[in-house]
View: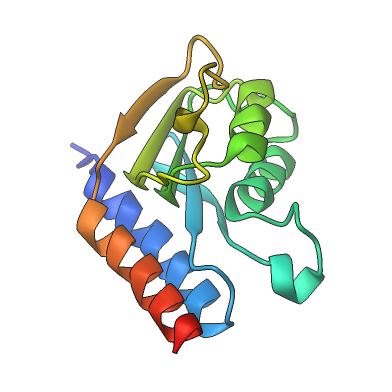
Length: 148
């Protein structure tokens, strides 16, 4: 019998990606996309390195997963992301028709949940608060260093 990996397990993998971003002086957000219990895409923010405001972790992961699957729709896939997606990334998730989004910590300033409209696909299931403190701590550490 195959043991299914937990949401905590995959969020820890997304946190590894966020740490890579932190180490590269990028805003530390990481993402992984899982299909059939396996990671098919890993990504972290690359906006500074690529000089591209759209190079968010989620966008990079969507592109990688679509390439892996050979199609633009991410049915039966789950996005694990350390910080709540912004408006752009939530809108992109709508178009991918991803099955599930699992969020570490909310973004009370720029997260899509701050809007009066829902941007995720109607069939997408959303779960928040997975390893919330660890995800929030990395963001706080990053911005504390930036301010000092």
